[in-house]
Length: 467
Image (cartoon, rainbow, N blue to C red; front, side, top):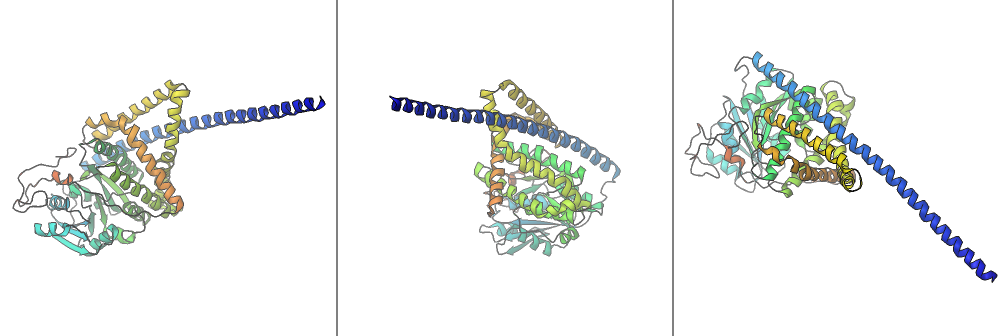
């Protein structure tokens, strides 16, 4: 009898202990969930506030930049600055577009242009395409495949002019692009000038999303950087440099995957000013598939992280280098690394909130932010002379394209932390940028890929309108 009572007490004790443990675990889980929900709510609020603050600062700076350009244009006499220019085109398997690129350069409204095409060991007919055009002032330099930075440095060594324009082999210039790009060099403190890159292949949804990203993101940011005098990147598609600035920076670096960002930061740290000229327009071919886009942005993001780490000592420097370190680098760290890294978690919490929290607040916040972004996008498109039609794809861009960019940053950060190395991936060209060339005054008896028998059409590249 006593044994039965003892057994019953033991079972009751074990049951009570198990219940207490389960209750304690449930209480801790509930408390932890509350803390996590509070932390995520704060993170979501901080992300929204930072995004809104970023939009406001970009628009204010863009408006200041626009007014400064207008004032500068009125005060500068027409045709004030002309100096010999060498355009360097590094090309690797760019037969689909390089002919159009060279045509657009030769037919510029600028009087003194030398064009050097550096064939970096192409396996297609890139060099042959240019050589068969037999255009005056155009030279082809062949080298064993050594990468884009080496090709650019080869072109710099062969260039005769002191003003150098670096152009990708898939880029098409408008007739006034070179003229507008180099006018800022009348200021002896300016060492480099960035042009305005536009997406040529924007007929499909992916192209429209990249078009919006270029106009709203890259170009608005560059106007802001110009006002703050801390431009961290001159795009490889269109940038002009003084030869002395390039020499002071040590030439085009090859130890990061974002050689354009690395070079621009080096120019700033060498004491030169870097500016942005939004009226110098270059049309480029953006990735046409998600796979190509992922590879390109993965390389860009990882390379930017490399360049930021390489130039981290700019944080304690003075002059242009200090402005880069204390203005541009923190901005890049917050808006191109930290917030994108938190983006997937914030979006997952927002999705969770739709089902388990008062969803009306989340929906209103998202719609409000979307309206602000749409207003900013409309302003940016008008600033660049673009149509507002692509705005309809903005909500889809926020739901799909933005998530892809978040994942790119996450993978890039993981690769950087693990010390992995990323190799170059070549993008397959469709030749859509080449369709924008206006033969104009060119010799129509000479053809190029896509039109080997000479031009028959006269499609003109106009500001804001491809084709």
